[in-house]
Length: 360
Ligand code: ADP
Image (cartoon, rainbow, N blue to C red; front, side, top):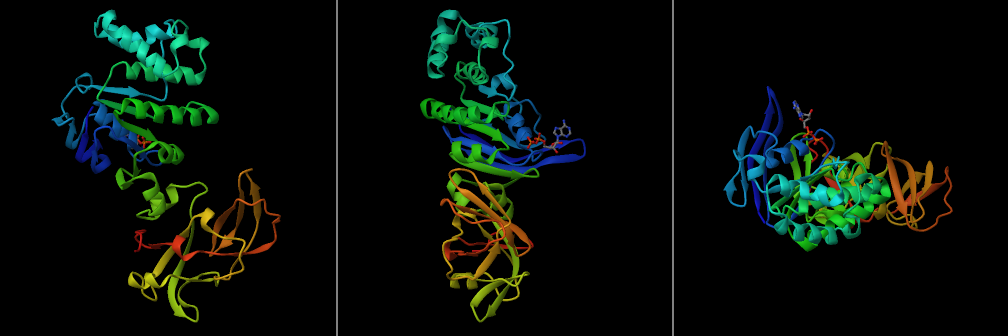
């Protein structure tokens, strides 16, 4: 088991810098998910931890030892990739035994570990099968079996579920989380899928353009995103935004939008936004009330109604942006209808429009 410390890590390819000084501490036994859009540098960061990519600058500590110059096999790490690359002519057992055999371990030593891993991963009755006789999920479990049998101090997962269909992805998410709860190893997991990050992580690291935007527990990030990037990246459907100017008018302290809507702000907002300031308001689709004609007088013409079964998404325009409102009731609302939106003060997020930073 191992804690991991990244201090001022950066990466250059020739003249191009792609990771710009990342500082991150990962506790022993923690499940940390690196998430961000494609190209933000998450795989590069993980490959530097694995030793597959040279570190251009900064310090990498694994289990208290400086690891910058250690070869991959000296880092006591197991990695699970998107493509599970099983040997097609070898049985499940031999696929898992491949690593220990290469390392010249005795079968007496590794056989019990394979049996234990197979039991944990529900592969016990498949040990004699060839990979082609397994489902996609079972193959991915064999790949995990290979990683587990090494008993590493650190697991690295690089988009391991991307090749699986949607239903299997959901199932494997739960299995990987359960595996972590049993093994209690340190895990660094890379994905571009914010739902995977939200559901599996002890802590999420949101990356953008080679930098960390925010680190925190999933619901901390969801409830208090530090900036517009994190606010729009986490959550599906995404948070709604509207730009406006702070005014002190008939409705008290408020945000005036370009379409004439005036949204009252909580009194506390006076502490960080002055009249005249350009502010972006954010609110999550599920926090908007539609069953009220109450406090705000914000009206939206519904353009699209999307039933998903459990909930319904209503789309329309507010302040020049498309907004989504989620309702759990089976509403009879039709496209073309105008509805009143309630925007509860406690669920409003305010951001500085120019810098994107959270206010308050
Ligand atoms: P992610 O995993 O977040 O999708 P990557 O870590 O793969 O992103 O890539 C980060 C950035 O580094 C991208 O802009 C990519 O084009 C660049 N990059 C990755 N590998 C190389 C390389 N070998 N040479 C030059 N640029 C690279």
